[in-house]
Amino acid sequence: MNIVSAHSAKTKHWLLGIVMLVLVLVCDQLSKYWILNIFDLPEKRSVEILPFLNFTMVWNKAITFGMLGDALGQYAPIIFAVVAFSIAVGLFVWMIRASKRCVVLSLGAIIGGAVGNIIDRVRFGAVVDFIHLHVSGWSWYVFNIADSAIVCGVGVLLIDAFFRKDSKH
Image (cartoon, rainbow, N blue to C red; front, side):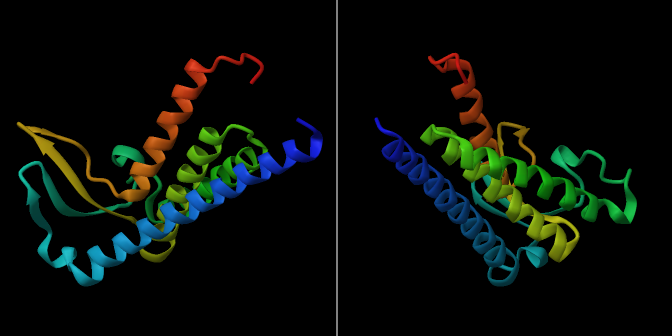
């Protein structure tokens, strides 16, 4: 493969990452708009959708699993947004430089999810969480589409890192 075609393939991967980022961001923000303004979940608080799935309104002012929610006081949303934005910029640089399609798509999903949650923190001072899975007394934390994209993206990056055949990366 010559240099021009290698550069072209890398550009195509980068563009796929941008498409994934935008897709995740749009789906996340549309779902939150629907939950807040059309379904009116803040008024309903919690609605059973399926025996194992509820839509439950949670305004997450903290980070994962509610950590550091009270420790930073009123400045928490700003601090969390700035930190998340800084990480997203670093991930974006990684995405532009990455050559593997699965890595680029994973990074696009993570960045799209991070930006979706940053938008919430700036607009509302908290992240809009509403998906609540539960089975036989077991209950997962309430999350959103952005969180799902971040978790899935990180999962794919970990799988790639552990099972990669090329040790140069």
